Figure (cartoon, rainbow, N blue to C red):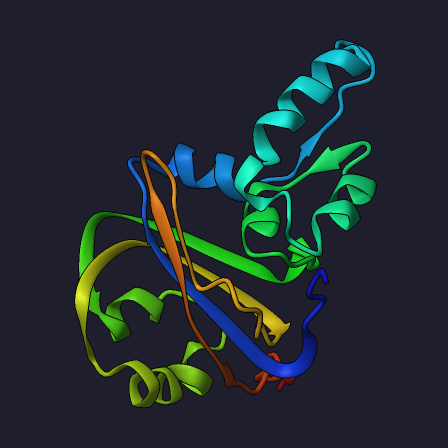
Length: 173
């Protein structure tokens, strides 16, 4: 089944290693069928590269084939999930780090979940990463934890509670 794990109050974390920021973006961005410049056959050819033969027996495979009639997303496909991209943050670092604080410290509301991720993962990770993906209001709990492609890899690290900090409002004097 496709996991639609929205759950207000949780943030899910993936860490990875990519060759470039462009490669990370290509992996995370949804690809839309360009009706003006692309035939259905051309779009289906691109889509067929996504649908891996080794996944043919996954229960969710047919669901994805139905969902991906006009667009697809490699990250969602790999981790068997669907989410609202508006709730995703991503960062690519030129230099990999194994510090949990350094990796998540550039994100929204990080001060409300930083300690939970440190408690879960430790401050020093066993491996260095150069890419971070966070999805807010989403509690991923599917069985797919690690994806390795030819030129990059990404793994799910966990989901922890977080609290949205209200925006600062200034009163005029």
